[in-house]
Length: 192
Image (cartoon, rainbow, N blue to C red; front, side, top):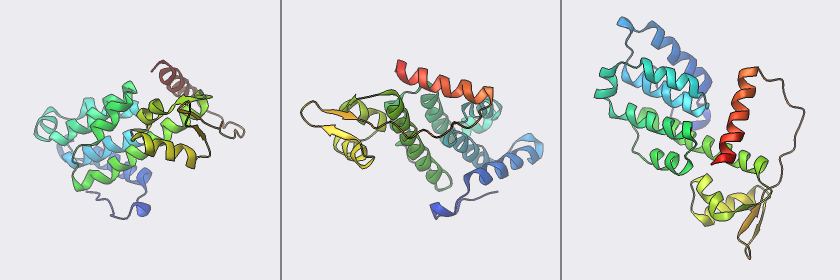
């Protein structure tokens, strides 16, 4: 079984994911330990790989789901991510996590905030500071501080944040599935 190293900078999440996928494939009787499913599900959420997360959820045996409440809690985060329910995502992430999963769930929170910040910078010329705080899952003062650290401007009179557009380098070639995922993210974000 793969265990996370305690130092965050030493964890290679892609390699860990590959190792866990291999463990699932090689598990005796086709049922892996709950910790393998939990870590793998959390890593799919971290990498925003919602399709694999959904397929994993469907193939996790019901006995594991019913005997391991943490598995259900991780999937609750996945459901909120799927719906792009930002307040719900951060609320679901507040749960107590076991030692084997807490570091990954912290990384999920950080990655979610980073994706939200990127989407805001691409989709908005200005955004209400309260709305930005909701997207970031932070108190208003912390959200304003996070925005100004990015070089964005905050107008205290109007309470609006003006993000700077990210510097666009030549877009890498995306597979059609990736293009569809990126487009879906933009449209879903704008509808929220």
